[in-house]
Amino acid sequence: MAICATVCKIPPYAWAAGCKKDLRNGGIPYFVFFSCDILTTIPNFGLDDFSDIADWCTGITAGDIAISPVLVGKKDAASFVNKRTDSCAPERPIGASRSISFMSLQVDNTAVGARTVQFTDVDFWNDTFTNQASLLAGYIDCFGRFYGILDDFALEVSETKEDNSAGTAQWEGKLSWQGTLELKPWLVQGLVQDLLSACV
Image (cartoon, rainbow, N blue to C red):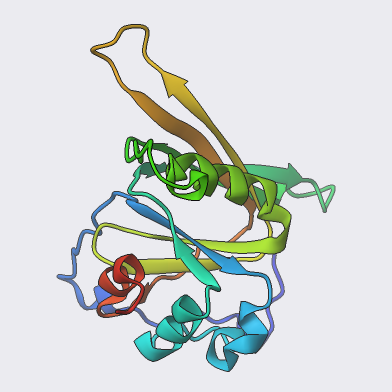
């Protein structure tokens, strides 16, 4: 028999009342990437509080927060690592790998002007891939809920092209991280709009 401390008690939840059957919609249209010092430059972020849009705009205007091109994203089921910790009990989860598989068809076909303004989707994904060890990450769902911050993630991304001129080129990849528990979302009013407009 398991021996539990009093702190192990589970509090009552809303659906215990009987009729709560809400659904949470899927879809991941954006990643958000942060400079590695964002948790110190924006104190509330360091306290795991992402609710104030003014904090976001501080980071956006400082160039410390960037949003990805629009995605078709899907969060995959976690892959758990199990280990036996008791000869008389089954293995139990001690870790988990989580990932988002994604595709992005949003590209920039600008081919004139300075090189820095040409094909900027290539720059975005190359820079993010190259600098990922110095970045933090999160993601936003289709209803504007933010999930993060991931302080240790792995990004795999590459451009793929279909085999005929009527087809498309797109970016495909996976964002992965380690974490036994799920990320609890924050609903930040106006977040997507301010990210896309750079708070202007």
